[in-house]
Amino acid sequence: MKRILVATDGSVLSGKALAKAIELARQFDARLTIVNVMDVVPVGQSLRRFVAAELPATTLQPVPLSLLNSYGISSVDSVEALDSQSRAVAQLVSDRILANAQATAEAAGIKGVDTVSAAGDPAREIVAAVKAAGADLVVVGRRGLGGLNELVLGSVSQKVLHHAAADVMVVA
Image (tube, rainbow, N blue to C red; front, side, top):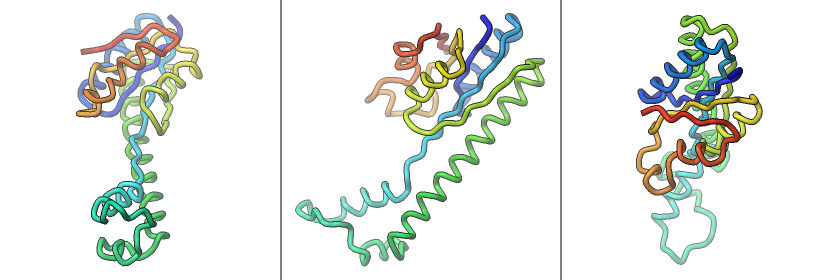
C-alpha cells in the first residue's frame, strides 16, 4: 500500500476516518491524500426555487424582479453575486477543513500529505480523486454531513464502495 486517500467533510465520523487513514499511512509508510468535496448549492438557484414556489403553478416565466426585491435582491446581478459569495465561503470552509486535516496528519508524522478540494457530487468527486491520486486504499466515514439525502439517494460511502477502483475501508 503506497497511496491512501481519505475523504473528510469536517464531521466527527470523518475525523475517525482521518485517524484510521493516518494510522495506516504510518504503518505502511504511504502517501496520504486528503479530499474535501464542497457542498455548494448556489444561493441564487435556491432563491429562484423558493420564489418559484411562491408563484402560481401556471407561471413559467422568469421570476419577476419585483418579487426578488421583496427578498432583498435588487437585480439578477445580485443573485449572481450571492452565488459567487456562496462559492467563496464554501472554498474557505473547504480550505480550513483540509488545512486542519493536513496539520493533524503531519503532526502524526506523515511526511507525504496532499490535499484536494473539489465541488460537485461527493461520491463522484471522491472516485475521481482516487483515480487521479492512484490510491490503493480509500478511507471514508460511514456517515458524514449528508443527513436525509443519504436515505433518499444512497450514502456517499456506499457509492464510493461500488465505484472506486481501489480497496475501500468504511469507518464506523
